[in-house]
Structure formats: C-alpha cells, structure tokens
Image (cartoon, rainbow, N blue to C red; front, side, top):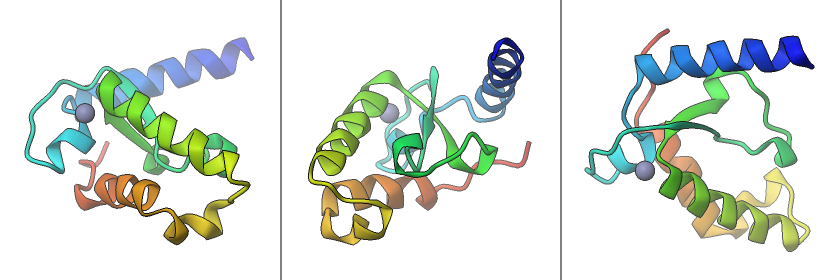
Length: 103
Ligand SMILES: [Zn+2]
C-alpha cells in the first residue's frame, strides 16, 4: 500500500507538471490551475489509475464531478448507463474533448 501510494504520488506530480491547467475548465474556455487528479471514470464505476483515466483538475471541478458521480451511483447505475445521465455524460465528454499531452 505504501509503495502504491508513493507510485501514485509520483504519477500525480508527473501528470500535473505535464498538464498544469484544469482539463474541465479548459473545455469551457476557463484557465484555472489543476491541483488534483480526477479519475475520469470513477474507481467506483470500474475506472483505474491508468494515466489515460486521470485528468488534472481544479478542486471545484473535482468536487462537482464527484457529486454527479455519487448521484449517478445512488440511482444504481453502472458505466453502461452513462447515456441515461446527461450531466455525468457531459463531464466525461469534457475530459475527452481536450486530450492530455503525452507524458
Ligand atoms: Zn476546473
């Protein structure tokens, strides 16, 4: 566990320095610094720590998306149901609208 969190910490540093602006804000034309990594597909929905599933994010976007995910999960939905929830579908589309630079 300790090794995993150390490896994740290094990954976080690497991804945030490669992409220092919040990806969700950029998708709407806003420029804000990213301070956390968002799991684009939440771990609770089967997402992984793979860099392709991690988006540098500001805390406001991270909190708002997390709220949308909790609401989605509370309905008993899984990832296959994402098109039934336009709000969460929009967050996922915004993560992919701007591709991360290669790291
Ligand atoms: Zn943001």
